[in-house]
Image (cartoon, rainbow, N blue to C red):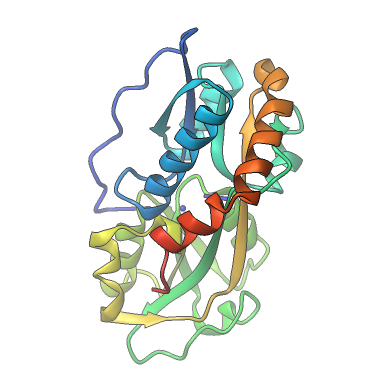
Length: 237
């Protein structure tokens, strides 16, 4: 699953070519976000477990999808379970490695959004981070009551609300970084709308890695890695 805007942060570093010594994975989370730091630490532990060298790259959602399709990267960290419905050719590692919470951000003094179904009554226009398939599908299901706009970063998504250009921004706590988190007190934050259990997806050319990665993820989670990193990187916004 994962998450926008006019205040775009500097672009990601150039992607390295896939090589025999290093497995390149992508993530849609920005390098300044809490989820990126989590993903990177998890990936390094995972790759040590399977005795591989790995590198994580921050990629816009559509670019990451294209690179996974042409084999430029081994896989992606942080796609929702339903991503397999859109791309059945990819291999999902059947064990969630991170859990995020989604929220709705509105202007101060506005009624709080209590659920996805309540969103149309509170906000006619909503921003979300470009390339996040989960939010795209959720907001499409609320049309015509909600008009959705995709933007480049979560910081820009929040600014769309604060500047009065949109009535709400939907995002997950993993997409936050220090700068975007600092904007939250200027508006109103909903209770968590839901939890997003995110997975590792492997490209069709790397399906042979799935058994070893699946078993490694299960071992690491059983040893408490997921719980430890959740506590380290995430607190309630």
